[in-house]
Length: 319
Image (cartoon, rainbow, N blue to C red; front, top):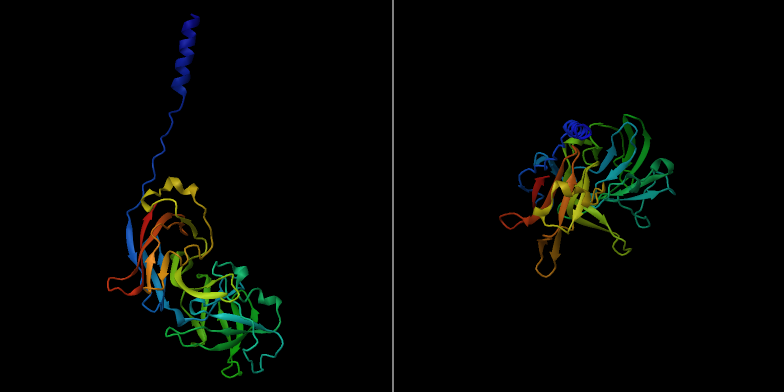
């Protein structure tokens, strides 16, 4: 009888135990290829969406000068780093004075996208005004200077005044915020807001020239050609695995960052002797997009089929 009870209890225990559910492997997407047209002179800025493997929009890099943070409580202002724009603070002159650039100290935006590291900084705590070196045109000619004062900010707009250094071509305008984009773009040439950035959730990467900062007082900044990511996009750089080895199950092996320049420009090398670029074939990027999907990406070329530079090509696969 005792043995029978032991068998009965054992049978009931295992009969009531829940069956373990097998964890199915994550099914990756197909490997896709894409070529981006920056142009031989790197004139274009190209906004790209990972999920659809498509270009969302593009513009000439000289189409804008400043970006104004568009959230209701936003106050940050960014420079157009694709033209090598820089900024100097002036607090010992009146805005109406003619300004010389000879003794000004220039700063650039940090390409990491950290809004505490912009050239403007928290200008609300500063007196005076600013001088902008607009950098270079596509043909490498100088775009000139503007002086600018940020007169006021509300939840809806920025009130700014700007002029040439001799105070000619004075303008006072309202830059109305577009809360559907990260930054509302403004052009001195158009004296108006211009449509540059796509809707915030519509893009992940921008292929562009941008200003890279070095820890070198002789060359503190340099114009490079590469890729910046949108805010809330995470990127990890890997040189340990081959592209084909990387899987969804390996995501915890990588160190992700929100730095906008995590992909950057050094996926290629420039040979000064041959005057040509080669791709660093051992570099992969793992990217989490704004829609919480993961991708792996590797660059395969910087030239198009005609041999023209400025056409970065890459392979992409959703993990």
